[in-house]
Length: 273
Image (cartoon, rainbow, N blue to C red):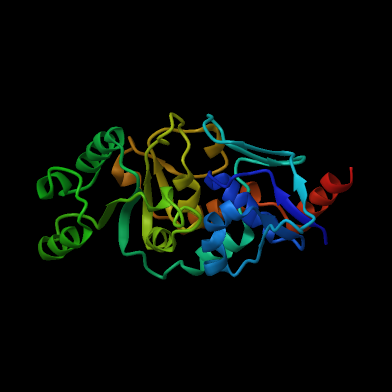
């Protein structure tokens, strides 16, 4: 197979996931030395292999790619193949292996808490979760204290609220295993709108791959194939339904992955056309 690289900088998560998907083909994948650190976590966790380019390497650059991120609907494109996101099959296999028999966390949010998100999150938590306001009065960052008090008084549903920037910084940006572990322990993932002025968020898709059901602030057109809850619904509607979980997982596989053979054939076309 030919040596290939993508004309990407791997700054965005969409770029990293596309690269990981391409690495699942039989092509020898190469990256520039300055981008090596941005993909190392994939090797450590998934055992994927790629090569760092040297001056003597003969590598074909695939230039026909598109990453649309700050848009109402995301798009990841390589050649004639387009998806909202193109995710590696290994991500689905691994995340499904994390699904526990019992999910001990009912509601969770792990990620960047902008001021706007803090205001919205406080409103959601205090109005939807029994006992939350009387316990904290504000968003609680210390999960250990929160769970300790919850066990003592039994007046609030299990909540995990963690402000974290690890998914925004390398090497955690390429893969933050604790993030996915926690998502897989949760029934519902709270999904405020994206922080770049867009309604969609990666968290929505990651939640479903981890077997959780999203609760969203704002609907994006790319959410149409999936089943989820709106944050302004009556919390009595928030039912963790295994049929919804299985349906969403299969829909994610359908809309967010590309069969390896299909991706390989498209790369061959891009090389030899």
